[in-house]
Length: 513
Image (cartoon, rainbow, N blue to C red; front, top):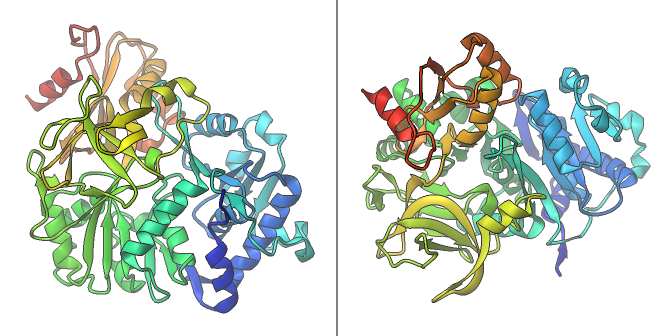
């Protein structure tokens, strides 16, 4: 097995160009030297507390200097980081920490209120709370871990949780090998240079954040954290920071279009634009190309189970369009990755035939964290007539491959949706809705849906005596804010299919009428 560390290149660069900017937050810029010192200190503390490679470290930090340094330090120490978003409900954070079986928790002083409410079980663990100069008081510099630890590529790089159908989040462990293949492909495609300035819009708990962080510091470039209040309309930020690469979700374009903020040639500093997480409409593609007139534009696709993204489509006037939805195609698999379409009998289908999209290759993870039943149902070895035997991930996405080998995404086959760039299981919302409403007769649907991506959630409730305001407040205790329904409809009954399931399609039709 290969022995390496994802941050080996950063280690070299930090010594070669210590005063160069590694990243910025607000008006504060942090040099490679500052980042290296903090990473070495935290990694030294981690090595003392948990010397065994592959152990998991919970990171409950905001998008600040300590948060980024903590993630890098975990990778530096050959361990696995588990991002814990402080914006999530306490109950959900507790579940994630317990499921991950973290050995250590790193937090910062912005999360003090949360720390007062986390489970007693977690509180028994070694906890490092970071604030200005706090680490230097706890760990002498002589105990710094000066060089990154070599790790086997089969070891975990990160464990992230996504929405689950059982009402609780499900974990996905990406290995060092999974992440390295992704990062190597992206560098081959985009050739990140020391002069590049990357955006950083994603929360740590969104795997797309790994692109911004690792692609920049491993190639001598810098990333720049977009403030929360500018995420929807980042135009001025792009200009002020002189960004050369923007990686975001199509919702950013939609919002700026509505606000008339996309002027021709307004983002001429950009040389690379990447969008993923939800369908990219044809109109949004055209609007962005006019604004970022000197930039290439890529539409990327990929589930967390296949490590960030694994399909890409270069967007221009001749790009294949998925006419059924008037969105850009998702393109072709990355080098080394494979895509295929199957029917209900698990027969591989020819081009032009619609079915379920399957993905195979070195970015596909080994399955769901401590959930063998779900893993067996979604990760299976099949014998492809051309590619041979591979372990394929069953995405649950409806798609087809055209005669040119370009893949077209047609939506979900189940009740998983895309909501503001997040994957969300409607069943998970239903679980929280039932408990909050104290009724089993409830249902949630995506509404409205534009270009295959949900703009919100509508909840239907029957037989509940709980006030709608109270239902919403109770759901906020267990679900992220973006999963809370925007509208609650109290009704006498729900429509059902012949299989005895709530007919969500009919509910959506009622909203249309």
